[in-house]
Image (cartoon, rainbow, N blue to C red; front, side, top):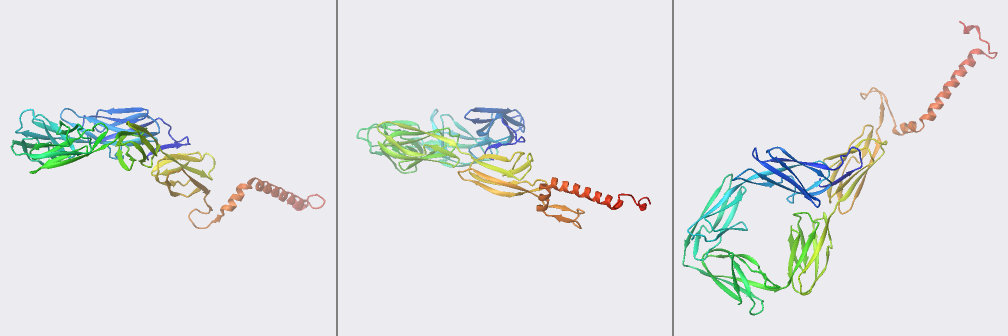
Length: 476
């Protein structure tokens, strides 16, 4: 389970704990490392043989960011994947932890070009990521899978193929790109609006920067896909600020709208790595899994609100932020939230060992309580039967929803039976009667002794007669 566990029992292991990870997927002889990181630092364990275990020690209750890496040798590269944990790779430590790190081999996806002048820079978009080279090949490391690609255009050249998809399946793959010189070009026009007249602004097209002090500018480009970026102009920012343009046999116009504003940065404090959060500011929502979210906005006072999963609390979670001629930053402090589940036992004699199982995890104690610290969620529990006692409830479901929960487990004595033990004959003593016997056993014992003494005295009186002398028959 995800969270911390606090047990008031001599049977519960005490921190520091260890986390043991088993590796899968690596060939024999590979080396790998496993690291757990929290606010106090990073603890790392290494292993030099595939299939062996890496153990990270000296861990305390809390959440950790799990990362892993592996090395085989020249020409091979591996990527660590965690199969049994969320994609955020956050591990909750509340006792001895056992996990798995699975590695998959990456293969070469190799683009080779021909026809370009030596030293010409060329680029390929694989998915949404741009890769560039000024040599004859561009080598990427990729896992098995299918990848779409587009070749970015170069003025004065056409390329075949212009785009496509390629499948990596257990081996290296090569994609040849054939460039040829062409005299046919098409106009690509960038047109801006809202900047003050005469303002100097810039376009970065396929990595090359051009500065303009007019409202529009044009390029003569061959067929192909081109990337562009529009830098900020002082406190003016562009929409869109980046993107791609595809030339395919006709002219293209890209409109750029500038808006005036100042940089506003919201900084996350104490937020674990890769946790998704978002800010709604002046009606616009920006999201991130990093430690900052930014906006550009004009002077004024604007409302903001913070959104994050139910397992975190943001301080402040909302408010107003004033912009007055300067960039502004605001720190948002995050606190991870845990709620307690308390199992309270009644009815058992002191120091009796009892057991409760929560979502498959067993907890034992001789104390009256078991306390778990958990995130919001649903938890199934089973209270084990104790010899001579039955539990109520014996099973159930607990839901944590922004509050702690106390679950009482009542143990009562089981029915006592007398007889042959096979179901025939005998009788049943009611539980209420056995409770009476336990409560008054010393008084009943004293009464039995008194009755026995009186019986013996009566026998002596009957045997001696009124004179107290023995009769003849007493000697017979």
